Image (tube, rainbow, N blue to C red):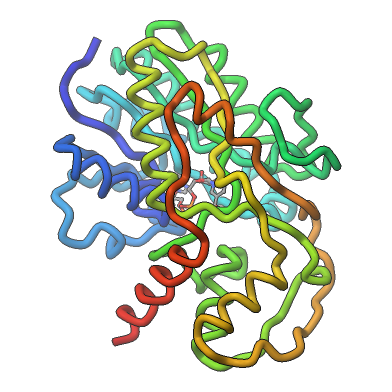
Length: 316
Ligand SMILES: NC(=O)c1ccc[n+]([C@@H]2O[C@H](COP(=O)([O-])OP(=O)(O)OC[C@H]3O[C@@H](n4cnc5c(N)ncnc54)[C@H](O)[C@@H]3O)[C@@H](O)[C@H]2O)c1
């Protein structure tokens, strides 16, 4: 069993992964990143002392190389896009589930202690019950959600020597979220539109609600989950929501961003519904508080301010 102090972050060049890398380094851990740069960027890790392995985490030989000598694994490698998974289900299965299977296999062969999987609230589908509690039956409505559910089930069936835990993120936002992708987080896009003085375009009618959780909080949830899993304190494959416990509508979010910039919110342009999108989403966060000691601490207004500042710095 490895006690090397070395952690692997698969998908570590991406938005959330780079926040986990920062938090691990701040705790004095050594970090290896595995990423194929499909949606991630080397610049997200600029100046950070990490070992970088470029490759496809779904390739067993790459996964084996990346897991060698590693104590704990954070598995984020995926293409986090519902519409892309609807359009290209086979490629999406490779990126979203093949990665998890290859890493689970390589991790148990290499004697790693724990693997934390980045799952998604998309697993709850459009069940009207709010807030979503982990014991609700899964109701995936897209290939992306199916792949995340399959990943959770594979973690639950992993050999007991490798301790596993899945975190179902709600809507994560913060610095380094990629706005150039048409699928990227709504806050990142809205923040840029609001700053540029542009009008807003909504999918649906703007009445959809989401639980927005700041990326540094999500990174902290990962570190707590890794510690609890490695210490054997969690059931194998335990699943936890990661959110704030409160939700806002897309319209309220846009108005809040405009207000913080002192501009008028204007009239939205309404686009059609997106396939596989769910209408309401709010998290029950009591299990993560009880078993991981995790609570989100960054309020939305503060997180929005930090995100706007980061965008201003990029453009400075
Ligand atoms: N952003 C959110 O709100 C959110 C919500 C729920 C779940 N998640 C999950 O969190 C994780 C990180 O999401 P993100 O928003 O940071 O997205 P991201 O696209 O910024 O990060 C994903 C990273 O994985 C890498 N990657 C993709 N396929 C790979 C492969 N085959 N091999 C190696 N690397 C690969 C990408 O290059 C990228 O760096 C994903 O698993 C995503 O499904 C995100």
